[in-house]
Length: 384
Image (tube, rainbow, N blue to C red):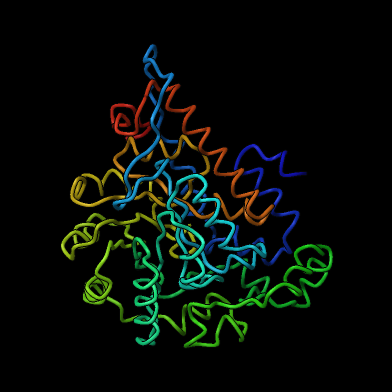
């Protein structure tokens, strides 16, 4: 299978599986416990149908929208994800360049494998930093100040990782950051020579936004679960979020909001946006899909705060459904991570291009010429 054979996100997933050692692929692909929530995140979109108009004159359409004060060419964000150079040696560099090419927001994680400063120098496009609150308050302050100096456009505080979910695929494979060659996976690494040689002989794997303060994850191999459970601040609360918003002083987003009550509190502390997200099904298995919660949250705070529906997006029509249901935009991580793992920057560009085509085609077939015409009357729910 080649990159040219990839025509949807599932195709990129299959290609990534052939090119990655299985512990690395399972880290991207896996989720918590029985992975029910991960599956539901995508399946939720199947429960609503689009209602098209015809004869609408759609020769010219405008897919752009404004997200957190910056124009986006599509109602789609590339969500921040961790340790991207574990999947392909280009890592966040590939995603940053692809996002800028297509005029999209993208984000980097506190656990990124490129530094805040490197990313700022790479792109003038809209960029978001995903902050994990560590027990080390000096580290938290350092990352905020570095983002301020680098003029990141927004800070997203991740609020759903107080402890790690039980990611059973990672427990079986022994996946760590940096990746290490466990006995059970030696054959898989040996039969993926392109990945293995890139990992061994290109620049050393590190987490440059953290390694000024902690060795874990850069020089000392740890599992993501171990890192979350030992390094992150379990005492984080709404006062913490309000203080971080104040310290940051710029556009502020809460990532991981799933209840209407929490959405209301986000408004009260002055957040500019929320990302309805269950961390790709990697935390609390059995929680609802973001798209399933969207209507309830829109009813509670719609018009008062921007709402980004994060997770499960595999098709352009998923973004159209999310916006029609009241979201500012949709976002996802695996939708570009599979492509990054499959082929680096060309893979990410091809995946975004496919989603762009699907959004454009979907709008034309719906009789919609601008994103603001995507409203609830375009939808019909199968179950109510």
